[in-house]
Image (cartoon, rainbow, N blue to C red):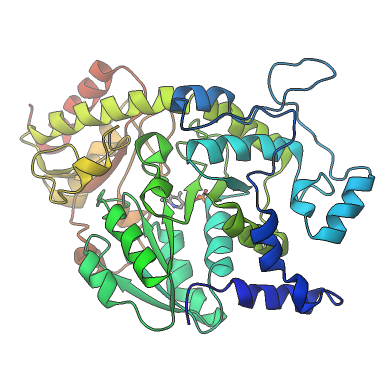
Length: 443
Ligand SMILES: *Cc1c(COP(=O)(O)O)cnc(C)c1O
């Protein structure tokens, strides 16, 4: 079985749509009339090839209201839109993704933020979801079929791992878990029925960098889908589509929105594949409501600016912790002992804003450290303007037994720090005081 399930998918569409003959296969129509978007004529179309990420963050996709001249996208709270001649034509031609008909299918406020994400990810098309998990579950189901096989890793966000381990086989998909940094092991895990490679570009919590360019090459050679969760890096630090990925996923809850006040997700890629994911999204129902789209769009306007601060902050904090006698080990791609040497070539714009480290004294010292911090807050999640710290052993990876944690490299005392945009001198002092209290050591 090959990745090319478009024919299968056309079959599914046909069976749900009596009267569509084999000659007018949906897949063929997709090929014939594929274009970027959905995008309305009043939206700001901006070519990512000729604009920087700062400009794209602010302007790409904005809905420019021709009646009022409002600066910024209006919030269309409507659930439904008046039928027009074009909408009937859209139904007839299977093009309803491009017309405002019903908000779960699409809404101009969704299209504005989707187009911004697409521009930032160098993709033709994007879909926003009600959470990162909605984006991931919908995409995994859309890009695979019953009897298919997925190659992925144990180094995944907990929710993604649980879905792949507990549920995908119930839908008739087989799953293999391999080391996400070992391209040879990934290749060796490919079978005749493999359809999808699914990994995180920079893993949670140990910041292992996937060999994305090699994975892109592998997907091309073996005719497989490559879908990557780019949450930790954002398109400011990596655009996986340029490296051969077919679909890029995000928990928009994290850096894309950036203010810890919204749960959202996104998928981006070519129009052809995003149409498949869109059709799955209609059935699973995880669309993002218009008010939340407006919040996400506002957050994204400062994405480039925020990421520059996160990247610089994480780099400095990683170096500071690396030289601290109370810290046993620091995980960050910019440090000289980082083991995955392809990362430097893949991350010319930096490695995001996360730093993981092992505090001396194990989990007990880690808990003490968190209780002593005054500016850095102990909470799960990441990617917001405020610095957050958590320990994987009793949060994101608590569903693993100790042996499994050791296998993926989560040692006692491991802390996951999301470096915010506060003043670095304040963050360093906060860490210095708390480390002194927790370990008795001062840098
Ligand atoms: C948080 C997270 C998710 C899940 O996103 P939600 O918005 O919480 O559903 C998926 N992948 C990664 C890497 C994450 O950090």
